[in-house]
Image 1 (cartoon, rainbow, N blue to C red):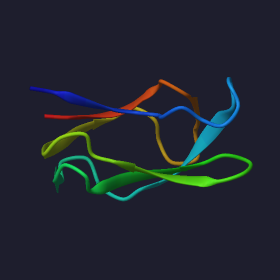
Image 2: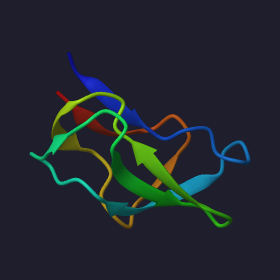
Image 3: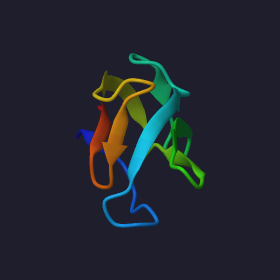
Image 4: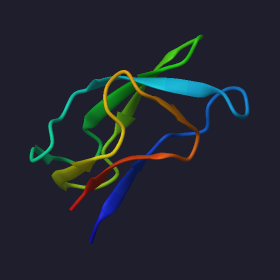
Length: 77
């Protein structure tokens, strides 16, 4: 079953975050709880963990691109 990697609630509603680094690459095996991507806002850096174990099959938001709360960054199968 696929699991989505989603941007968590950020400090201010509507605040944007930049994808700073994909720690895992597309096609990589990841374990639930493993850090897969790092995003940053004007105030903080946030490490996002894999919501499930599997293979990171899709990356939807590339490094350097902006995103918002609730956006899907990638998918794990």
